[in-house]
Length: 287
Length: 225
Image 1: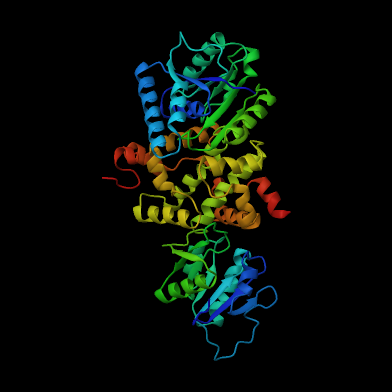
Image 2 (image 1 turned 60 degrees about the vertical axis):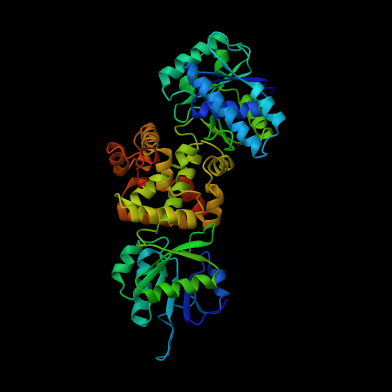
C-alpha cells in the first residue's frame, strides 16, 4: 500500500496530533476544520511542538523544515480530492460523522480510503450510508493521545471492510513505527473496553469519596501493579466527565451489562462539577 | 538474606511461590503432606510468626486457620489474595495480618495488612527474605486491591476473546501501548495463573452476588485445562 497524502478532518487535540504524526512520516497532510481559526491554531501548535523537539535534538532543523512543508490548512472546496486517505477526528456524534463521510464519499476519488478515529461509534454504522465500493475502503483507525507519542493504533475492521486493507494498514503502520492492534467492530474496541474495570473496580473498592483510600489504591496499583498512574489520578487527568461518558457509552452498548456499570461516585463527581485537574478539583484537590 | 526472627512457613504446592518459599532459611511445612495440627509440636516450640501460604477452598482455609489458632499462641499471617480477608481477620483472633503474594507483581511489590506493629515488622522482614517490597494497606477487603483490579481487567480480556473481538496478542499490544500497562492481560494471566484469577472472581461473586464478577467461560476453560 502506498500512502502519499492524507486529509485529516478536525483540528482538535486528536486531529492535530494525527496530522503531526503523518507529516513526520513524509506524507502530504492537509488539515480541515469547519472553524478556520481552529486550523490556524492547530498548525501553530504543531509547528511549535516541532521547534521544541528540534531544540531537544529529537529532529534536525532540516527534518522540521520538511515536516512543516508537508502540513497545510485546507477547506471543503479546495482539499485534495485525490488524497490516499482521509482520517476523521471530529466530535463523537454519529449524525455529524455520517454527514461528513457521505460528503467525502461523493467528493473523493474512488480509490481514497476513509477512516474514523472514533473511540466509541461503531464503524459499520458509519459505513452503511456510503456507496458499496467505498464501504470496502472504510475502517477505523483509532489513535491514542498524544498521537505523535503513543505507539498504538487500533485498526478496526467494519462489516464491509476489505480484509486485505486491514493487513496492508497493519504492515504500513508497523513499518512507520506504530504498534498495531487489529480488532473487530465492537463497543469500546479493545482499550476502552478492557480498561473499564481498572477504574470501575477501583471505584467499588473505595465506594465513596475517601481521599485517603483513593490515595492508597493509586499507590498500590502503581507500586504493585506497575501501572504508570493510579485510577483516581488518571481519571482526574482525563476528566471525570469524559471517563464517565465513555463508561456509560460502553455500558449502554452492552445492554447495561453489570461488568461495565458506572459507579454512583462518578456521577456524584460529575454532578458536583468536580471534574478533575481541569476544574482544579476532582478526586483530589489541585488548588 | 538472613533474619533474626523465627518464621514457621506452611504452604500448599499450588501456591505460586511454593518453590521459592521452600528455599528460604525458615522452618517449612508442606501442607499437602503434613497437616500442621497433626504435627506433634513440642510444648516449648517458639516462633515469631506463623505464615500460611495455603490455597484451599474458603471453608477449608477457615478450618486450617482456626486449627492453627488453637495450636499456636504465636501471631498468624495468611496469604488471603483470593479470599474475603476482612471476614477471616474478624473471625480468627490469632490472625494478625494478611499478605497477597499469590498474584505476581511486575515490580515485586506486594500489599499486606497488619493489625499491630509486631506483625507489621514480621511481615516486612519476611518480604525482605524474598527480596520483595511491601505496601501496607488499611484493609484486606476482598482479595486486596491489586489482585481484585487485575482479575477484573483479565476477565474482560477473556470476554473479549469469547466475542472474537481480537486475538490475544492484539489485546496485549493494545493494553501495553495504548494505556501503558506493564504487561498485556494474557501475559499477566501466564504469570498469575488462571486458577487464582478464577478463584478470586468466584469469591467476589460469592460475597457480593453481583453479576459483574461472573467469570468468563474462556477463563474457566483456561483454569481447568
